[in-house]
Image (cartoon, rainbow, N blue to C red; front, side, top):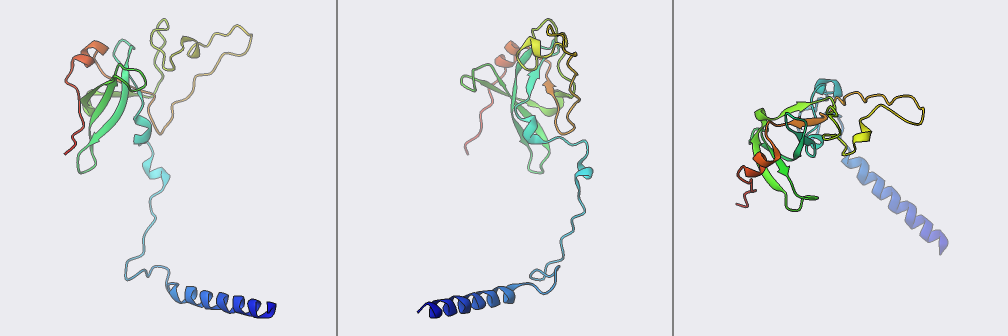
Length: 174
């Protein structure tokens, strides 16, 4: 009885393997008559480009280094070019937030951290995070070098009140 089960298992494996070999393409580039795909792009061809997934969520500051909101979305045309930026103003954890759409050319991106002017505008929310003075006797903190794949923050020339006064952006449901 055990021998029959083993023989049946081996025979089934041979049948399955023969079907798999029959379906393997004979040429590497021949896939149903399609031309072979070229993989000429590499990470170096995108040097200097930013990741859109990292731009969404950036803090937005005004010219006075005051935090006025964050980028909630990027609006593209059908060709893939980014035309607008949706900025969320106010609210708490997205609740009660006022969304405003502004043209991309009105938003400037900065790779350097926001200058700490008296602790009122800190990139991390804590004025001590940007400070290089320590009281423990440790070496001063080094400033982080800019990330080549995304900016540090965005700058839009308007106060928080001016942004809240702008018409609210609503996503179309049609």
